Image 1 (cartoon, helix red, strand yellow):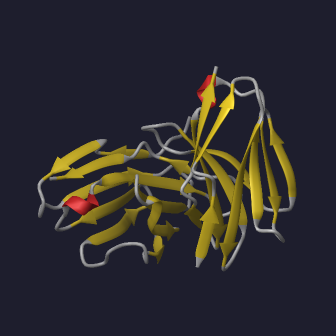
Image 2: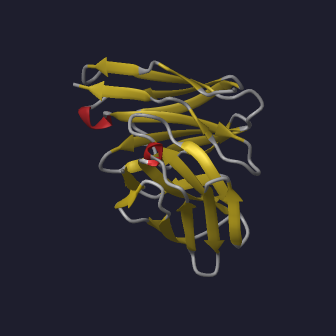
Amino acid sequence: GQNIDQPTEMTATEGAIVQINCTYQTSGFNGLFWYQQHAGEAPTFLSYNVLDGLEEKGRFSSFLSRSKGYSYLLLKELQMKDSASYLCAVTNAGKSTFGDGTTLTVKP
Amino acid sequence: DARVTQTPRDKVTEMGQEVTMRCQPILGHNTVFWYRQTMMQGLELLAYFRNRAPLDDSGMPKDRFSAEMPDATLATLKIQPSEPRDSAVYFCASGLVLGGGYTFGSGTRLTVV
């Protein structure tokens, strides 16, 4: 089976850095996705990690450790528009299972 | 930008009625997913197709839900009969098997009264 854990909520200040963690225990693993979802909208793709290490894409970075079943999403220079839910998803044989998401609130 | 198109955007129906949701995946994408999202359960995978063939529909209540992909440009999710507990946002997503992420449609917000 699949078990994916993320914190339910986080709060951070505009301009700061925040790290959203995701731990997983799955029967198979091909890769890990991070998605962003604003309230009332569809999830949008942020990053995909297959190998261990850090993937950087602008203000967002994602890290993966397969041996530890652990990933994090790092958001730098936070902006108000980054307030959203961040979903971690593990993929196996083309099938993605999502965590419940972390609701991030960015305050001025 | 290429996008996944879902119709209808919103649907309100009475319990017992049939509901059909449609999805047009991005041209060239060979994998199509149906997800359901509620506050209580989060995003749940209902079914997915690769090259139009159903690969996994274990997340779907088989007695009332059915998913098909009659051609490469259309995926459908049908509920018959609908029940109030089916009220949720239903998302379709498409992508390629290897690499990249999946693109989600805007969703169909279903309310069964």
